[in-house]
Image (cartoon, rainbow, N blue to C red; front, top):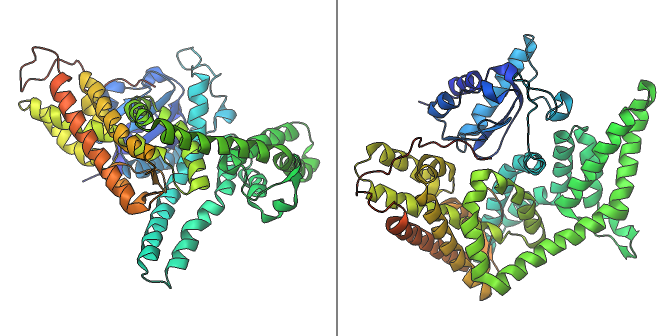
Length: 483
């Protein structure tokens, strides 16, 4: 039976104890910890911990513990609870923000300053803004899909308007949530970030003229909200460092909302709207002009992005496309990478029939892989063996090429929400011609990726001379992190 409390306690102990943890957050599958001293982390014991599927960023201040969907939510909550309990008892603060604790500049216990690439740090923080939105995107996306099916079938006409209102309400106000979370992540007052971002979706902006044209409510979308809240946070910090306490409580929020709001109306909304339009135009052009080639590249390169944790940088792009078009055309292509890995894992299972340990790992990881959660197969099977990781990418490229080919013919496939992939993406699929053709094309892409990943791994996934049923030698089937 799963014991998330025990898992959280063990993770804290093996990462150097509560005093070594500066910041805690999570995404769909990973517990993300910022540690003061990476040398205090017992990587071997952490990898061997039941329920831990892999580590990313081992030996660096940014440690990611792969736990899988569902589990990561409860374990993260328990880690935060234990850190908070320690803080009340006189220990460290739970979830201390990087700005407050001087992350990236304070020396660790080894005497070295933690190092983190600026790009990786920026992507991680942007991901921290958007990842909390994913559950709502999933729930509202599924309800939108169900409502669309009922409308097309003419069923339950009294219920479909209610479903439409429920599913569309969140997307109509998503800019406010992005503003709130951006200010929270970057050390500002969250409600001020939300207040500034709310300007973007306020209907009254239609009366404002910027650059010779009237603004449109929602113009700039999540990108504008992100920029507005970042600016508000900078202004707020500047004010708080210069105003005395008696004036701070009155002037800081006023100056922050006024200055950032005017900048949003007369600059950021227009600029972010142009960028968002370019993203939508670029994605459509890529698929309608280079269809199979775009699919090959996107499907083939997504697994390395997941391995490095860089796939989170695509969340704002997906969200922007969903805002503009009602669905993201990129997610079904990227989902083919996981399908290629499933095919590759099946080939490993068939080829290495005497390796009972590896086959048990594959059996336990395959259900998650079929539902689009790739980390168990990445870190437990394909990446440690080396070649199967490459051949899985080949399978993903083939599936992406299949879906991209139909996009070239005018049959685009999109997802109304982000988060799930694999089989879990079926309820969220739609396209130019409705959900039925989109589901058929996506299913064909999955089958193509399974088959090519399986065949490529069987043919090229093992060193020449490897006996059937015998695994090639690997020193550690759970690799050190690469991020």
